[in-house]
Length: 397
Length: 139
Image (cartoon, rainbow over all chains, first blue to last red; front, top):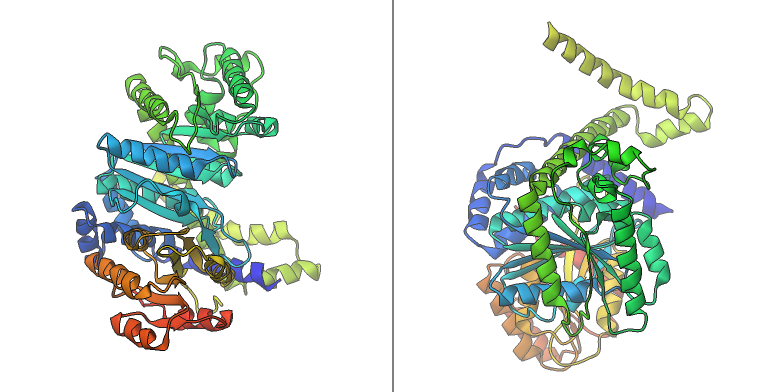
């Protein structure tokens, strides 16, 4: 029982430190670090990513300074169930990109223990094709369990790799839950991996991951059932096309629809009922839609990897030519702003809780029937709301 | 654990260098480190010294634990250390060696910059304690 509590506590102290360090000024020592990174120093890049992961004081200044140097890399997310072959495929992809002269960054995200915060990050084991090649920069990250924190840290790490000058950045993550989906959505192009013989896998895809895939890959395509998995995916992709009636549909809604801007929960729009979706996609008119590609690969041998890269390139071209890239990135910036604001306000709230004797003391009051959670939450948040109202009033006057 | 306030997550690379295929010890250590709250990057088997250097630098680890049971420590460990120096990563990486290392060689490895050598039967708690107490400070 001691575990979860300790974790909780660590989380709140970290949030507290964050709040007192919202500054975006670049600190003196960090200017040098940034310069080293931009001039191609691997150690500096590694250090910056650590700072980002740790949310160490001053990291915001660093990331803010990185922004000016980003936007050139193709960012590709690779997701799928455990054992689908993501790491092996990423390794082969990295090697193929290197063969054509591109430099590569990889961010591999693994889960961490909710009890100790510890993690074993094993994605590196599969990195066998890029031995000693420093132009493949591989970084393992663990999900350190903060609300929205993982996708934010990943996005910031990707920015560091982008600013460093990587031509391609691959994000690898287990497609298991909402936070992983958020992570992979920080990519411009998303590949969803499925392995054959797992009809159930394809079923789970429907639950949310189907909407985010730009390319669907049946890996281990030399196994029994590959044909069927490919056919099922094809059918699903086309069904989703068909139900769109020319509009943005699932894909559009998930990636850049108006609904996605309202709340993160709304990003994964359920099956649209007929007509509703069609009337709601005015901003999508006059552009060609991307039809997700379905491909088979055998990551172990590298079969199909070149075709997969061609599909990524085609999607990147589509994004640029349709103007989708601008919209995707705008949506992502919107999400980043929202995540930051939410985290910062959350940190303020954590401080308020601390000032009232800590969360345990508050919980005890509920146990003793002296208060209830709704009342306590209102007590904590009302002052913040009042401050905001006062501010707005002043602005108006 | 977190009472002292903000605590950086300790990042470790557990590495198997060279040709021996005995990774039970490395696995046990990796798991124990994870349970101690560390983030552990595991290298996998049969890694060359350059791979270990590449991983240690890119992952920006605080601790590098090298497991060698082949007896080749006198050739492999110096190569790793040289590589780390090349990337300016030697100073603030705590280097540990685990495995069967003769007495005389232990002194030599420490001379090179290995912080500690843990032989068979070392209690897990001792290794974890050593890491906690010796993780290099940053800035």
